[in-house]
Length: 64
Picture (cartoon, rainbow, N blue to C red):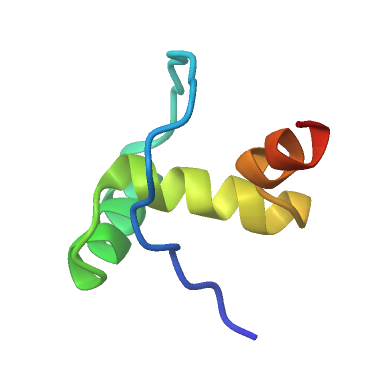
């Protein structure tokens, strides 16, 4: 199944992190964001959650 960014969802408690990535990779992520009418950040978070197999918010909900 091809990667699809998740729709923007309710805000959950988060932290600020900085990533240093190549210009070419940033351009690819930006193109995905534009093509899916979402933010660069949402694409990156969706990719991380997809690769980890479960979203951080799902884990938080399971703990509560």
